[in-house]
Each structure stands twice: as structure tokens, then as C-alpha cells.
Length: 139
Image (cartoon, one colour):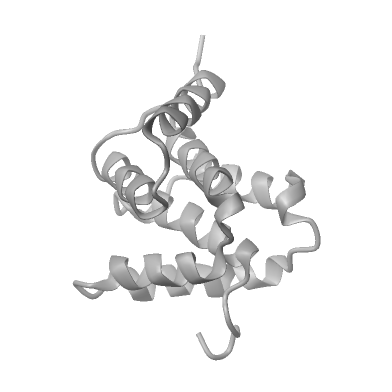
């Protein structure tokens, strides 16, 4: 990570979104569009240098390879992300997971890991998950 410098809070959010997308080994176009739209439109990403996204992607791929990579990834995220953004991080993660219309398997397990690592209240997490499902329903 030396070429990208330390992670910012915005980097941590991007890393989490990419991690959820990559969790099942298949990064879908709908997930990439969701990540791009979030970065380009949400106030939490105001002033974010989108040129860092490829570096964040590479960081995720590098960290998810080794056996203890997920633990290292969450360590970086906890170091960079202020507590007040934990719910935002989980909401963004849920939106990426729901972008293709289903949350199952590895993506569901990754969301569970994120929920635990960020120590989110179960009731709040359930509300965030339900909101993501509602926003991504199809007719």
C-alpha cells in the first residue's frame, strides 16, 4: 500500500464495497455500477480522488488471497474508518451485495463478517439490510 499511502475513511468505504463485490469471486457489472454511482454521487465521497479506486481494488485482491487476508483487511478498515461511519459502511456494503438482485452465499457471509467486525447493533443492521432489499426490488 506504500504507493497509495495510508487508507482514508473514503478509501475504507471503497475497499469494503469492492470486498463485498469480490466475495463470491464474480464481480458483476451491476455491482461495479453501484460502486461507481456511490462514489460519484454520495456526500461521503465528496472530494474523493477516483484515481485511487484501481489501487483500492488491487489492495482487496492482494489481501483476499492469503488465508488471514480478511483479518488484515478488516484491520485496515477499522484503523481508517471513524465509528460514526460504520452504519454508512454497512449500508454501502448491503447496496453493493443487493445490486444484482440477490444476497446469498459468500456475499451474505461477507456482510455477516462486516456486521461483526463493525460491531453493529443487530436491529440497526436488519433495518439497513431491509432498506437495501427494498431499494433493489424488481417488478
